[in-house]
Length: 298
Length: 227
Image (cartoon, rainbow over the protein chains, first blue to last red):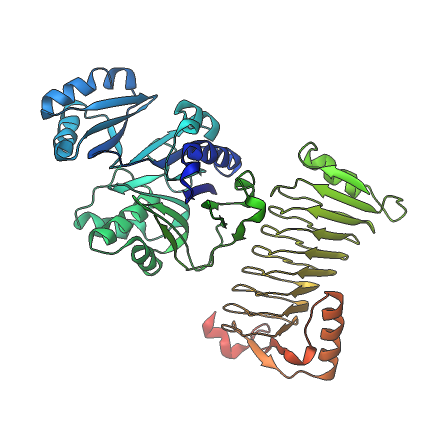
């Protein structure tokens, strides 16, 4: 069992409240997944910078002076915002690859959670409320975001095993369920040049969608083909730079509820995750159909 | 009318208060406010009381019901009215998966749509859905009646025993051993009664009946190689 929440805003005036709305939804899903929690949040694309969200088990040591060291090594201006065990590095797009290479050399133990123009990912082991507090998730603003509370089944309870998973620029995926063909699919995707951080089945689903989109599919097409190629139980919610998608396997035993108003599209594993959203009483509320792709784009 | 506010009442207290109302109770009308999708509301009732739930409910609302009349003014999460023995459960909105599962008796009315596995393993309950039902509905259904005014999804009545299925709209596909059957006068009578009790605007003649071909549920030595 796991809990999923997602929010895709249509009304820009709600953007400053995205973090607080998602945090409230996430905490409501604590009893579906008390092991660990995570959130991916899509902010504004205000510059030509790349954002790298990084994580360390020893942030005091690893993040100390890291921005200066990276700026020198990559000969670029690197800024850093530290949030507990995570930090967001920003660098101009043209120097992003150099900074990643320098990071791997200077701090080999630091993990890259996500890379992209606007997405940041925060995830840790612990109760959703504690994770949200550590990263001040409620203070964040953005246009869309996805959160997950995990009750582990397929792999260990670790920071890297928490969701969301990101395997491509500004792409993320959360999963409720379990996949049965992830090992064979992982081998195929590795041959296709995709790198994996964990043994987790959900990371394979994320990588599968990334691979499809790398080969020219849009989010909707990638989700459509996942119904043929992924075997197992799944409700996926995925985010891209300007999109938000949902798909459930044909058996559809993992729960899902959606709500749409003029202001937002919302996803919850259960209705109670949605009850505090503005205008929910008047929203169109429905259960996504099995083997049916839903996606929205800004 | 007695009111229970779920925002300020523990679930166990709410349910034990309702469960304490037996045949001789004077307090026959109850209202539950602020359900907000919480789980297992109004479960295990065993008295002739009327309970109105004002809002949508989460998992397992109105489970194991006996005698009580429960009205959900909203939609219901998974497993609503599971294992009902008698009484009535009416849902104004939609119901999530396995509504009315394993029910032995009573009447479940869903005025919106029901999703997958509606009436799975039903054992005597009557279910009337004003809208559509999802895939694998009435899987291994043993007895009782499932009436659908809209359409049915894939694999309707798979491995069916003796429940009667009546569908007015289309059936996407029939499950193993489920076939269309002749509508006889006694079936029209059953349908007429159920449609009236469920406040459904439909004529019995508009429905088709589906039932078991009875080829699967008794062991047949000719099928031995299939096991």
